Image (cartoon, rainbow, N blue to C red; front, side, top):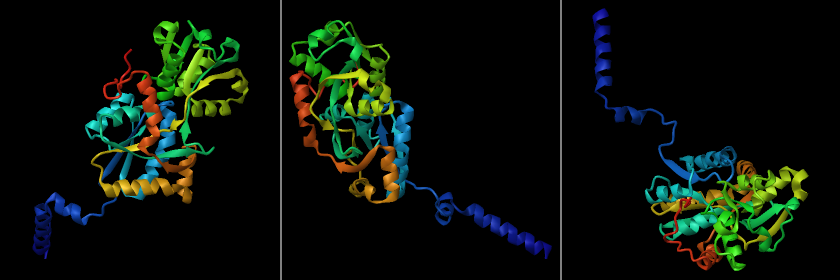
Length: 306
């Protein structure tokens, strides 16, 4: 009996060892999703804030699409274009001007964007100051002051203030202001003005409103000097080559998530009420603004010139 038992055991081991890894994999339960769908975002607000906002969305889409939806936080506007071109990401949450530049040289498709809880799916660029600076809407009062901007590939944080000043005869920001401060994010540009590091600033109105609502004591200290036309808020766009079934499922999940409890929780983290569709034509006003500035959107650098 002992020899029989040993023989059976050896036979079982031989069969097991003869199986290929893929054969074993076929009979084992699969508890992980095999496909990964990567969406890139930029830290327009601080990094921790962005991670907190988008993590619930990734988890929700992973469940609905039955894929591993991954949020990839990038550190530069040029990185999004590079990764779209190299197909190392499947989509990205584009700021409006970054979208215009990328669309001019790569095949991307806008899908949807969040509507803020206040009912706004667009934003405006604003130029603002503290009340104690004494600056007014007259750009002559801005001469030789310090201005806090965001990045040269942002609508609110560079293109709009440059366009506004050009309309008033100012050709060069470098020569008009005593210092240009490129802060890298909208909230950092706003804080530069709050803290007195800059006399004047430019940023998204929605982010300024959010910061003022969280700090009501300083609300009366801020004066808005100018505002742009409305442009679409950050929109999720997909690169060419993404499977049409995935694209349609993603779009359906986004546009319907306000109808269920899990989706509403995700939207709350994004400070949004729902997602709405985004169309390329909605960016035409921004394209005109770039044209007025003499910007060639096919060659304008994604990375700051400083």
